[in-house]
Image (cartoon, rainbow, N blue to C red):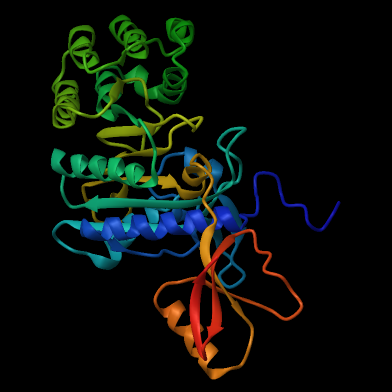
Length: 385
């Protein structure tokens, strides 16, 4: 086994891709700043009980664990940064009003999400705390659309859902709450046959609950799904409020390609309102995911309304067209003060200047030298090649 081999699901990032990723990172964080989002940087590792607070069971499966040599307590290498940012808002900043926070950092998964996914992600995202209204959800979704637009993603499609829909069904049937994990798995896979067979095990679901779950598995499509849900699912205040929230988002995004998938319950136990996933040609699954998660900060002693999104910058960059080589100025190596001053001035103005070391030709694949710094009439001048 060669020393150059990496663990499965991990990979080096080579110069052209690293440059593309870094340029995107800077551009997106600058964008979030124009919206009023403040940058935070949580630690890579922290105590496991804090790291997994309020996240449900799924994140625990993706979290690498180790023992702290100083305290003897179990630590976790973060698999997602949202809970960390929520802790910062609830416990450290402790502000009364609306707080907008953004972040970018490496996360590690103990196992890949699927066969095509990496275990190391460069996660970037933004969160709004302190406002429970639809306006915060809409601001986050608009920021997502601008994010992928800046990156050059063509024809994105937004898929909306709401965690309150399935919770409304569970609220009317104690047996459904008891078997929630089983039902959620069947809904995720849209397994209608499995949903029909639920009453073969105890505790048995109410007939109307079983019928509603089968209908829910097939409630996906365009905006008309919202009205279909009002017609097919048992009426309740919780269901009506959830569908009203979705309708408000749909009405506010008339020029966006979107769909509704009420069986998209991947964040059950974590999300508390409108959720969304953004898809685009060139990526095998959702490029961006987000939504409302009002109950997570309760674990940190201060419940705060919250909504946000995150994406993997490495995944985003991998689906884009290859980065063009950078344009650079070729310069000779030397200790002439005038040459040194000329090179320094070019670099200060934002130019890339590659000095050719003695005995070497300029052979970097990352840059195309389309100009050269030459000595002409006693003055160092840039010449077009």
